[in-house]
Amino acid sequence: MKAIVCVKQVPDTSGKVAVKPDGTLDRASMATITNPDDLNALEAALKLKDATGCEVVVVTMGPPPAEGMLRELLARGADRAVLVSGREFGGSDTFATSQILAAAVNKIGVGPEDIVFCGRQAIDGDTAQVGPQIAEKLHLPQVTYAADIQKDGDTLVVKRMLEDGYMMIRVKTPCLITCIKELNQPRYMNINGIFTCYDKPMEVFDYEALKDDPLIEVDTIGLKGSPTNVFKSFTPPQKGAGTMLTGDDVAAQLASVLAGKHLI
Image (cartoon, rainbow, N blue to C red):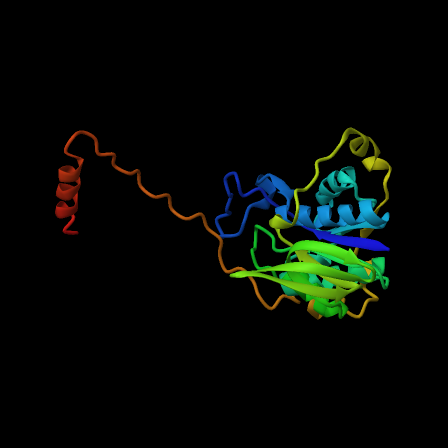
């Protein structure tokens, strides 16, 4: 039994978001982190490993430096990692990305008891599209926005978050689950995990490794295979500083300011 976790390395948006003159993100100058929702997906897989002894495989698509992120996930408890990397994959939107990741999952292999975990969405795009698209392309049943997961034999009972409540869904394996932050609290790396993470296997799937999969065609991957693209990214202008009113006549001061602006 395997738990395959799809993860993404994203810019750390808690700091300054750098934008190039052409409006695209300057990713090279920004710190990167593991996408937060993907850590919840990894924790769900690790809890399954704790309960059943299954193998946990983490897979990401990105440039060679993404290996560092994968090593951190191995230190958290994953058993092996797969980096999908190649120039042919550059410029992929969610459609093309899901094509490539689905082919990678196919190469890893999905057995009758296996589960594919994804985060709900990535903080750099917020589309929540890649996980469901992978499920469709692998012809797997899917449950999104999982807030609780219980395994019962060859089925999972998933508590799915809705806008106004929750619904309970029973789904058979193999399946794909997308996870939200309410599902769990991701664990940290430990000393033993840090010492052993470089002893765990890491594979690289390039274009040559995946090109025989029916999902991988020149017209379905990379920039050419992306039906959507970002026209422009920019940092919104900062709001002006506010005005603090002090003293015993704050109401009168406020009325005077509003009257001066013809708002009252």
